[in-house]
Structure formats: structure tokens, C-alpha cells
Image (tube, rainbow, N blue to C red):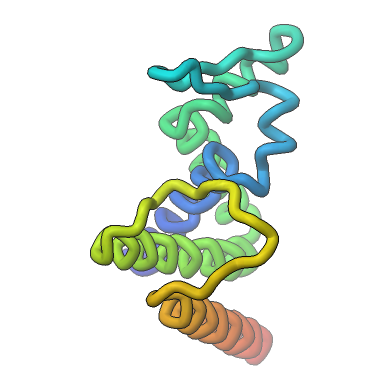
Length: 156
């Protein structure tokens, strides 16, 4: 494994771990294992179900724990099918770079990082155009690189 592959797989593990532990889109899955709350001062969590569900709840509630398991799965996938795992990881690696850039951008203009519930009608802010452009650019570059990689892999 060369250094570029290591970096791409590492960024993919970072993004997949964040997806399962923190992202709103996976909340319905997490709720089967752990519910989170806020008591006014502290974040609380309650494990759900029997021993297996509680174990999974502990894993998806801890990014350190989840990161180890995600790393093992990504490396297992890389050992079984390096090309497919590499290109899937490439998508998540680009997503993680985009998230890091956007977080830095939001912090630099004083925007809060935490997502909050917003009304159905979204108002444009001073950086929404830039954010949309960065997202579109990274997704386009990622798609082009994946297609190029697949074409090069098929030409071998």
C-alpha cells in the first residue's frame, strides 16, 4: 500500500465513522441502538434493547470505537477487492475533505458548526453560494476521478 492509498483510506474511515456516529441521515439507524438527549447541561444517551443491541449502541455512540470497526471493515474490503474498495473510499475521502474545508470556512466567518432544525423555506446567506460551489466542484471532480479510475482499471 502506497502513501496515497493510505491517505485516501484514512480519510474514508474518518468520513464513514462520522457518518455513522454523528450525521443526521443515519439517526434512524442509531436510534435502534441508542437514544441521545440533552438534560440542559450534559449530553445523555440511553442504550436500547438486549446485549447485542447495547454493544452496537456503545459502538455507534463512540467515534473512537466506531473508527476501529470501520477501519477493520475498510481494510478487509481493501484486501478482498482493492480496486472497488479504493474507488468507494475515494468518494468518502473527497467528502471528508469537503467537510473539513466547509467546517473551516464556517468557523472563519463566525457561523455555528452545529446543524439546527431550519424552517422549510431557506434563506440565502453570504456564503451559501460559495458553499454550493465548493460542494458542486468537489462532487464533480470526485465523479470524474472515479470514472477515470474505472476506465484506467478496465484498460489494464
